[in-house]
Length: 265
Image (tube, rainbow, N blue to C red; front, side, top):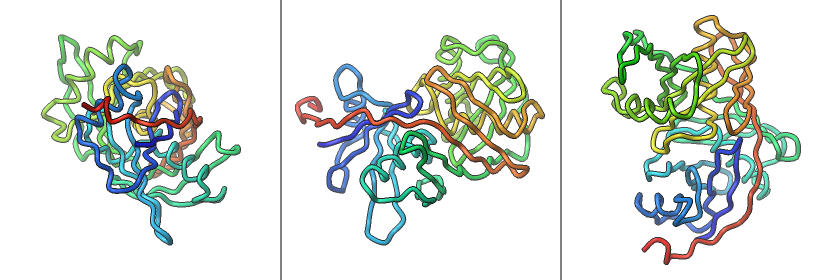
């Protein structure tokens, strides 16, 4: 099986370049994404391309589950489309399980901007919960996929790894959730650590950046233009008054890879 690997702010995906249907099981996807026994990645993107039709992408997490939407994955998919000549430098649309997004490749492919849609907030706020002895205010928001934003004094990897998997599986989130631990630096900058549903601790996330910025804006903590800082890099978020979000961030092509079936046994 043939793949091309890209990374977007250190969040890396394998783009499948073979014929459809994509034939890997959940267990085989996990093995392929394994950084010791496979090619290594935070997920797999499967293009669905047909003449005169909107390009679509199926997004797989490392555990083999499907994601409705991935900001970093979408930027990578857009760069792949641009590299292959499927799209031009103008604005185009991509279909995901979480909805249609408008995209544009910038800076000779090194950056991609995506209109991610509107952040959706629940009708009722969740009460403060105690998790592992810590009182936490959970702030759910949807970007076409579920998120839970938690404000902390100092986000770090240990907190994300210890609390993230517990919050991901709370009964409040029947489809599980992505979790963001957020520190407000100033009105234009957030520091974020992420536990990603179906993946685990991750270096960066596009939809998590959108979620963190949207909740922060709703609470009056930031201005409409926000830089979201993560270990993997910085993503720029712009929100309008209706919480429609424009996300822009980097993309880099890593290389082409061939998967030997032996590693799936």
